[in-house]
Image (cartoon, rainbow, N blue to C red; front, top):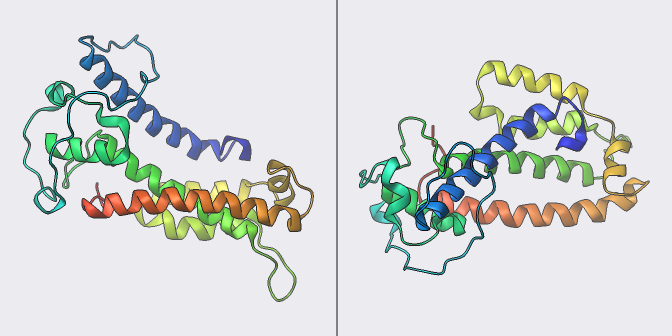
Length: 224
């Protein structure tokens, strides 16, 4: 997203903030497992992931859709004898069991953060899908700004307040032209870009579908 220009960095910065939060949660849990504490000046990248010790808790969707808090956030990282940020599923299950996910108000959980990233991924996927398509009946290609706006209305706008929706309109006006996007995938013509973009879209779709299933299973698609 950063390669799309200064205005789109507004969105990429939000994405970076969310991924940094998950990294910090992962790091803190990893350090707690090793008997250390994560201070404000500690490293900002997680230790090596790996499900090497312990057994995952027996978690069932039917009894965790509205979990009761079993521990506090302060003791969460000492509760589980395995690395909960090994995968999306292990993170969601552990945070639910610990009561870190709330369905009524905002929490700084990895699960809530993942939901925001999930929606942004859907926007990017839809934008690239549009760029991979051919011209309309009049031979005209939609501009990236038009495609970005169409994708935004479906993937993100329903979850954004009015001010953020207005800021998004400015971003779409500032998006570069289609030729710029072709250069990003190292091609010169639309005919060359289409197969490359479809490969990228397919990979994004796999990630989006798998994440969607997990979020649906645990009723997390509308977390505040």
